[in-house]
Structure formats: C-alpha cells, structure tokens
Length: 241
Image (cartoon, rainbow, N blue to C red; front, side):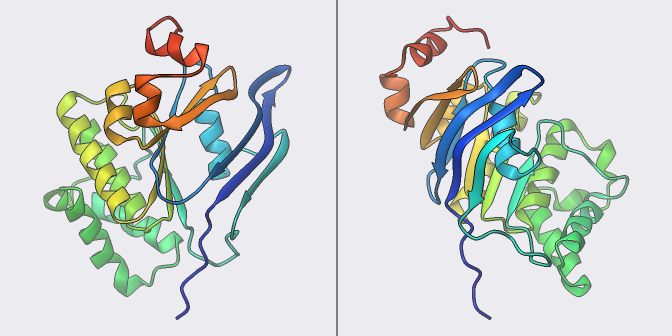
C-alpha cells in the first residue's frame, strides 16, 4: 500500500482570531515543518492555547488562512492529535478508552485491542488496562491520554500544558513519554509555562506576546540571548505569567 503523503508543513498566513472586539491571535504567519520540537511560550493571555486550537482545527480563524500540505480526506485516519491539560476520560476502562479512539479512526476491530494494550505498555500503564479511566490519578490519566493519542500514530501531536497540574514525579514520566513519541517520528508542538521543561524538551521556541509571534529561535539561543525586549522581560520574570 502506498504511504500517505505528509501533512506537513502546516502553513498559517496572516491568521487572526477575535472574540467580539478582543483580538486573541493577531495576524500570525507561521510554517511548522517536520522534525524539531516546537515549544510555544508567552505570558498569560498571549494566545498560546488558542493558536494551537487553530492549528488543530478546533477553532476557525476570524481571518487568514491555515493549510496543511496534504489535507486529510473523508474516511482517512486522522494524522494529527491533541492532548489537553485536563484530558477527557470516557466512562470505561483505560484500554477501552484507547480502543474507542482507534475505532473512530477506522482501525479494524481485530486490531484494536492489541494496539491499545501496546500503547498502554508504552506509557507504563499495562497493569491498569482494565481499571476505570476516571479513577486513575491525574498523572495516570495524562499518560493514558498520551497513549490514546500515540496509538493513532499521528504525524503531529499538539500538547496544551500537559503537566501543569502534575507533581514532579508525574511530570518526569510525561516528559519521558513525550520524548519517546518524538523519537518515534511524531512532530511535537507544545505550550508550557515551565521554563525548565521548555529547555529539556524544546528544539525551537515560539514566543507569543499579545497574540503575535515576536520571536522564533533555536531553544538554546533563545534562553541564552533572547533578541526581543518582550522575551527578555519574560525570562527575567518581568512579564506576568
């Protein structure tokens, strides 16, 4: 069977999103290509989460254009996924949560259980396969959400503050999984308030301020020598989080 054409790069051209008179994302132009892990940083209200929802297709821009290199066609398996700070867990077991997602994606019934269990093993939750998802701890639920996304083998994975409410041990586990997903070939796009996490996981930084990208740079250079006044203030703690 012929391999599907890559959906990357993702191109945003002069994209804006407003609610009433309030502009949240303001004339953003951006190209996201395969490879580097892209971390989106910025103060509270900068538009980070909204920008990712626009990229993922959960929101439609007020103006501008968002275009994948190879748009998904009706009936095709979705090649992008998103994991939120507080993932939605279905009222069923951990393994059944993943099986459900695989079914929606069109995976054959005879393949779903094996793929779902493999995904759980990959995030260290194989022993909890039959446990109701909603009674898992916060860290376990986030790992399950990552397993559910990873089972679909997305080309792009959007992560919205995936460790914001987790303790250090659970955060380390989630970071390990994100690194493994990246190593397996998935493009990672993530927003976070954790600067240490951005240093550990990021290859490049997009810095947003008041809905605009004011700086894009390799992570090492960004943290060593930010070139925008707003980014420098942010790193020094002079902009509100």
